[in-house]
Length: 457
Image 1 (tube, one colour):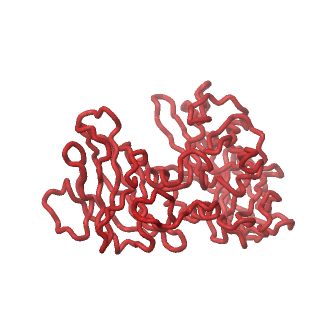
Image 2 (cartoon, rainbow, N blue to C red; image 1 turned 60 degrees about the vertical axis):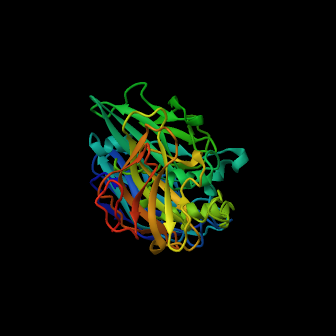
Image 3 (tube, rainbow, N blue to C red; image 1 turned 60 degrees about the horizontal axis):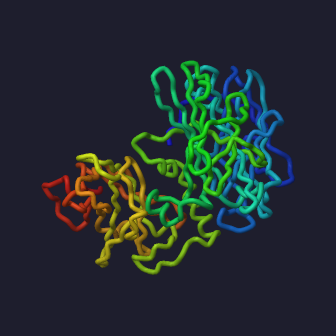
């Protein structure tokens, strides 16, 4: 995930690196804002004796305050350090203090948080960076009684990272903000999430607004993604230009009515390459894969391997993850063209499909996207001998054009991506009478028809 270049403020830290203990003193970071504008603070965070997969010690909650006022909470998931960022909002020129402490909202097993190398980044008023920082949403935690009440995001569906996308619209610009949660307790089931998106985290856009050339919000342009994925006008409160939202459903839609206790003012400075899928944010923040797996195991959602036709959810380490660009081609189809990916492994005649033969788990050809194919436990990169693309629907006019394979990887024992370098020298088409095509084969000799076969390096 790319990040906006921003000038950093000179720091005057009282305690630049600190282990903050529950019930103990806070860590303070003093700094000077050179001009008025929007500010973000970054730090590498870890927490002793916590693990998102461990009941009772799922996380530690870091409370961040600016000049004594609660700015944001951060869910710290493990002993493995990860760079995290929170917004501090608008600051006037002059001296300010950020305070870090362990929140009493932390699960019982949390005892301390390590804050390493904090860095304050300031965007001056009127800059391109400030325009993006200025409208980033404040997201309050979910409070559904049936899922644990006001502290439920400390044990499930924790919001971890946010980012933005800017689209030019004539003389104005549209800014869209998205959030990634560790999971979704409702909505799409886990096996379908893996088949169609290559993840069981939840990714949703939450707020979109149009701004003029000065970065001012255009009246009536602000919308949110509400219940049932409906785009709804935003009618809630603002902190200056920051809308106050709250996660309000078990599949992480948002509302403009706020009654939550946990407050997540996530830094949204980053953006995703338009040629990549939304899931590529996890490649930039690889610690998220372990969080994804931890919640699945703790919730008892991972089931043992029962064969190639088993539709259940497996351990995330048993999947081959593939990101590619697939779009409709040829004559406009009657219905959206769908496809699946198939994988063969050495010494096994079975073709393992991403959709497991279920049409509702097929992939739509809508541009950059990711899929994950469950393979027998223990399968690794050297065992994979073939990758195929297969048409699913029967519209004879519909074609799918696969123009690129951007990434392919397994997760290692610690749930870190282990890449398999991939390239697709020429586009591949499937559709009509050509129901499938080999994207790569370890066994096949190079062929002159490169529209049928790609290659991995």
